[in-house]
Image 1 (cartoon, helix red, strand yellow):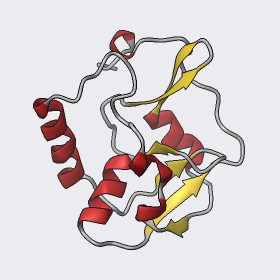
Image 2 (tube, one colour; image 1 turned 180 degrees about the horizontal axis):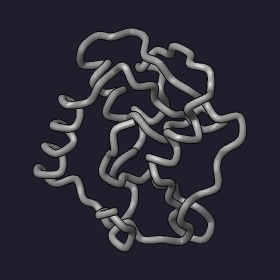
Image 3 (cartoon, helix red, strand yellow; image 1 turned 90 degrees about the vertical axis):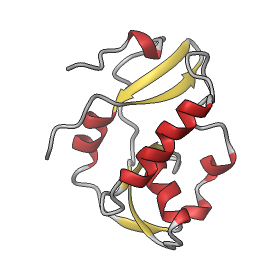
Image 4 (cartoon, one colour; image 1 turned 45 degrees about the horizontal axis):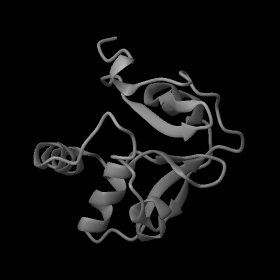
Amino acid sequence: MARIRPQYHFRKAQTGLDAWRVERLIELSAGLPIKMINPVEVAELHENHWYFHDSVTPTPLSIIEHAQLIQACDLAYPIILDKQGRVMDGMHRICKAIIDDVVEIPAVRFLVDPTPDYQNCEPQDLPYDE
């Protein structure tokens, strides 16, 4: 697997923000069965997926950055879902699939969610230069 820049999946928790390293999620999900899903059925499409915590603001520049990531992503890689079917990695691929009228994309789903790599954290305090 090619090395990717450190990326994180964030979730609000009772004690603050939890974070999972995406590279670790990819490693942990490698043996899970791949199923095809319809990207328009992903619940997070109707939620504030990228801007729900205080450290990010939906500025025009941040939207451009997401648009560039959507254009550059590869639909061949499965998105990663938690045990409840919520997106842990792959929202840019989901967006690209919808823009390109792709009706099925590969996904894997954890049966037991991995523990977070960081708990009660702030995104700007996490390592991004590993």
